[in-house]
Length: 82
Image (cartoon, rainbow, N blue to C red):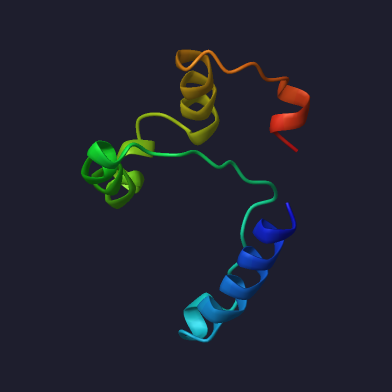
């Protein structure tokens, strides 16, 4: 948890140095961390590059919920969303 707090804090400060258009940048609260098989790196990279288009048809919460369910990960929504 402390690592993610540090990464988010320092990266927010760095993003804000990239121009006035980023002056209001902030990360959402919380985080999720997942490992990726090396054979899936290209697929995950493509997914990240196309997030805007992908999320135009499905919102993040629905996608995240589906991912957790498909991978049989137990979760309680009161701890997943703020």
